[in-house]
Image 1 (cartoon, rainbow, N blue to C red):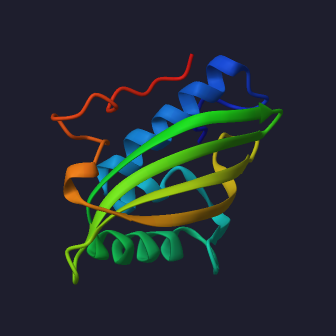
Image 2 (tube, rainbow, N blue to C red):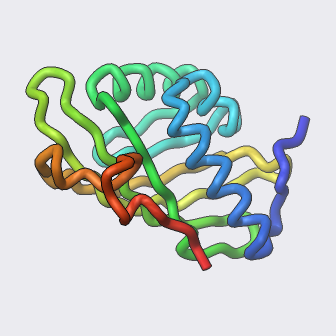
Length: 149
């Protein structure tokens, strides 16, 4: 089975992949998100390394049990052949402490011929913010408008 759009990517097809990833991650559904990755997908998420959909689902379930009210935006940074790079920001509230954070980062993706992500390499930094500084997914802010041109 294929997961279009398929490589090699054009600007338009890369933008479709990025938007699909943003939509899936904002669902906060680990099973849904894991289906975009190859069964043997290799991940680096900050200082964690793991392989496979089961590990991805487990990681995401733990992530969203801690990172409440998670809202993400991704922006296409670069693309070529079967690779896409994005920058992202997401905001979340820590389940235990109640502290809000904005996470800034970059991801580099490699896709197999069927359009599944076979490698995800992520780096990020968490910045503590106050609830009033939130700007992603909030109806009371103007900077909730992000679209690539």
